[in-house]
Length: 232
Image (cartoon, rainbow, N blue to C red; front, side):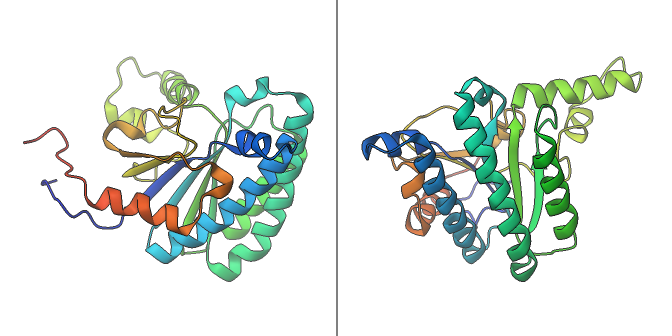
């Protein structure tokens, strides 16, 4: 791909949604209040992505490291996820959105898995924006999953394409743009393989305050980048 100073709208945008807890703490609210506010930011971002012409939106919803959080917070997150999946499944057909979920199924609760399977199957024919939810996701674990799948096939030597073909969602293109909110500037075990040539956009805005204006700022920054892909 040649260098360009005016990139088109990225086909695939990934977001590390960070800052729910800090947002709640600043307002002297419980952490779950921050997660509820963050769920509204998800809806705003989904609408903004569709409006901008983005085709794939990957959201880092729950990492493999998040199991270390207090159990009541985890329970609250899963309850919120169930409610969101129910609402999403009802609305997705109307809006043409397709749902994918990336991550390890174990040890997710059976009730969550049932709702995930229903949401994925009921939206698979939709041809609008694809929402890829990274749930119980870890990038190192994803790469290990791919390697183990290749070993199970009897592979003794793998190619780069072999690894790519055995990731959680091999049909998706790598994200051109990765956004992280709350001022943190790290990947936190997110899309390590796929992010090799992604552009990064970091914002101090906490996730519950993220909206269409902030999303468009990220897109504008991306469009101004020069992407060389190792060339000159």
